[in-house]
Each structure stands twice: as C-alpha cells, then as structure tokens.
Amino acid sequence: MKERKPMSLGKQRAILGYAFTIPSFLGFLVFVVIPVFWAFIISFQKYNIFTGATSFLGLDNYKAILTEPRSLQALGNTLWYAVFCTVFNTFTGLLLALAVNSAAAKRTSVLFRAIYFFPSLIGLTFVAVIWQVFFQTDFGVINYYLGKIGIPAIKWLNSQHISKIAVLILDVWKNAGMAMLLILAALQSVSRDVIEAAEIDGAKPVRCFVSVIFPMISPTVFFVLIMNLTGALRLYESALVLTNGGPGNSSLSLVMLIAEKSFTSMNYGQGTALSMLLLVLIIAVTAIQFAGSRRWVNYD
Image (cartoon, rainbow, N blue to C red; front, top):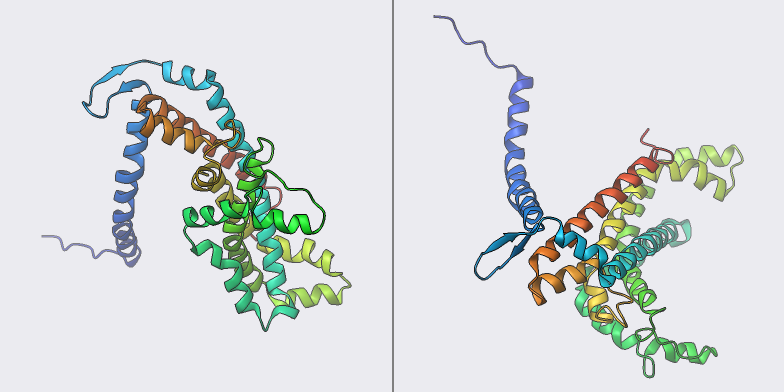
C-alpha cells in the first residue's frame, strides 16, 4: 500500500485561506447575490406581497418608470448628487487632510481630526432634523448670519433651484470628515525623505504636491471617490428629512422613489425595476471611474 504524499505547505495555507473566506462568501451569497437575483425576477412581474401572487408583465414595469416624469426627475437629481456630492466631499476632505497634516497643525492635529470627523459619527436622520432648523427661511441660523452681511434671506428648502444645494451642504458637512481621515492616513504614510528630496531639487509646495505627494496618495483618493460616488447615488435620509423630495420633486432621489413605490404605493414591480436601474447606474459610473483612473492613479 502506497503511503500518502504529505500535502505541501503552500496547499495547506491555500486550503486554510479558502476556509476562512467561506463565511464571508456565504454571507455575500445569501444577503447580496440571491436578493439581487430575486429582485431582478420581480422587476418583470406584478407582485402582491400580502398574498404572494405574481403575474408576468414583461418589460411593462421598465417602460412605466422610463416614461414617468417623476422617475426621470429623480434620475436627473440623483446624477446631480453623484457629480456634486462626490466632487465636494472628496475635494473638501483633501483640503482638510492637507490642513491637519501641515506643520502648523501638528500639535493640534488630534483635536482637529476629532472635530472634522465627529459629524460622521452622528446619525444622519438626527443631523438632518437639526439642519432643517438651520435652513429655515425666516428664523434659520444661516439666513440670520447672511442678513448680518447684507445678503437677503434664501429659501433653502422652499425653492426648486436651491433645495438640492441644501441637501449638498448637509451631505458634505456629514461625510467630508470620513474622506479627510482616509486621505490623512495616506498623507502620513508618504516618506518625508521623498518630500525633502523634491524640496532640495527646487520644487515649490504646489509642484511638490502635484508631482510627488498626489501620485503617492492617488489610490486612496480614488477609493474615496468611489466611496463618495456610491454614497451619493444611494442618497436618501438627508433629502427625505430636509425636503421630503420637494418642492415639486426638485430634490427627489432614486432611492426615495424606490421606497415610495415599494412601501407606500405597494408597487413592488416598479420599485424593483427602479432598483435594477440604480444598480446598473452604479455599475456604469464605477466602471467609467475605473477606466479613467488608469491615467492618474499610480500604484507603483
């Protein structure tokens, strides 16, 4: 009888690694893949959640949402949030990280990190209620101080042209701190020797940042961009509490419309069809970002 050849150390480590990934894989399968697949099936049906009865509608749900003005308005608003929330959150986080990482702020960096990051720890619904008071036209804090410098009162929550800007301000105040913390960690990992070498070669601060520092932190900045983009596409609580999607659907997001159709109108077919549209949108814009990142993200 032949003796069994002992398993190599590499194979043992590989099996152990796969064994440790099984719980995560099962969780992903049960809580992500299967629900998405089931939602995809329901998006072609008329589904009654109370009786479980279904009837196949084909593409009718998709035709309905793509021709409905409110769906198109929500899609346009969501793309607006995706652009401006992503840009302002990332840019503000980068500026805050540079300020905290500067030599002048070394002694107080822990304090400033805590101050800037603190909004990210507070529940968004609670924060939105407070900001709703700040944005009040007649008695709001913001308009009060704007009046002190001669700027007339702004209808933050009652104007179709400004309501999205109010949501944007809240979103940046809430999420820029997380971007700051991630970018700051990348900045602090940049070797001081590399920066000093660039300074000895005559590089000015701006040139040093653009040519030396930014390429080294670009993978983290790219991660922050993806994080902010997917978060903006899923924007819900801030717009719901601040404006409830109004006035006139001017701040309505896709996730708000999905919740309305699914849990208020009980139209699960159109709700899941909108969910599939949002999923495709997230995949598309993320793929575009990954394609564009090849030109400016440096992994060396």
